[in-house]
Length: 292
Image (cartoon, rainbow, N blue to C red; front, top):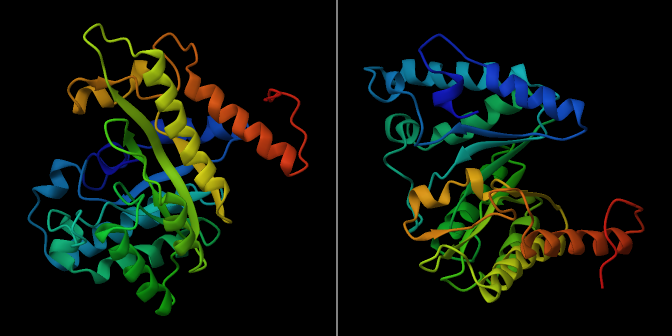
């Protein structure tokens, strides 16, 4: 649902792929997360290279949000309204066409327009490298406090969680999510994968797979331990289609399944933790395994 797919030409939308996903979800009792409405990346050339006045740009964004969110009203549970708007130092990204050309106030407008188009959808900020308490997550915390004081309909904050075993696990993930929950927000893990530095033969060792499983599981446990963190999404489920090898040379095997869809230890770690949580909550899901 990124701009380049949904809005490939000015004045023309292409909903074919998005409609198919939403239809599939409805047929299979699944919920959908919409991604994304305001972002600096994967915008179509007509937008990025166009010669628009600020008023024209504002109208383009409003039309896009109203059209897209309105089309899926009642069928999309959560929207990533503003995606990756800060850099790692906590400054607003100047490469974001909306913020650069229209100023930071456009962020509040985007949330307002999305809420008007679907009052029941949960509206999120979403970013990477915000798992810990750091300059970037602090910037979101301050902005969200300010926006909510202005009654802007911000419902949630989400951490993408593209992790790597070459770095330590963000041990303050739970603490960080909780401080956003304490603002009255929903929180979420939205794009979790855990990449590894692969050996020369491309096959991770059992020790590497165990470490990966631990990272996946700790992310899930952190979310489960925070009230209101009830949205947990892995970024792809098979290495066959993973984005990681394209962007991180020498790293890979980041998802919970191999190319042939057989399951890694990470898959079973998540499954067992969810099974235990279901028992704890008094829920009965006969399809889940019994775990030690």
